[in-house]
Length: 186
Image 1 (tube, one colour):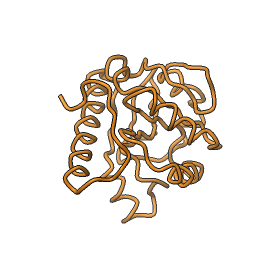
Image 2: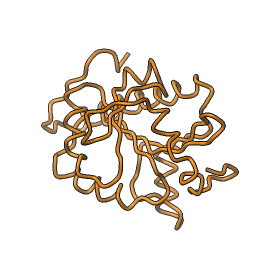
Image 3: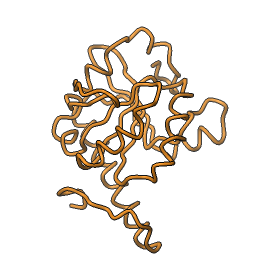
């Protein structure tokens, strides 16, 4: 129920209860994303942020950023891995420079997906990440929940849209040399 309708979140910080409320809604909507992928039958592995944080902080085989999730789906007989960010509310513009740098340093993931709740935030995030040297794709949350891997996404800095599935299946050989999950070669 929390995610129904178009979201508008005022950018000024309020008290702790507002922050806790935002985190709750973010978690619930991230769970909806996870469940939508499970329903497709193509989900191989979902690594939540807590596990990413643990791996980053406790091992030498982590990621360059604390993503909301690292996801592996099976498409056309290939395992496709991508980093998922659900950007429910905008960050201050200055934070996106650090995000771009971290994504550019990433060696364990080839694809990056940002899901957002509305077009205004889609254009804001796409603009802030457009100078990234890596391909970052953006799409709408509600469309993802309805279409999952057939979601139309746009690469930041490009007006062309394509499906998430087609983005993930391009260049499979380069991606097959990626990081190994316990028991899962990606």
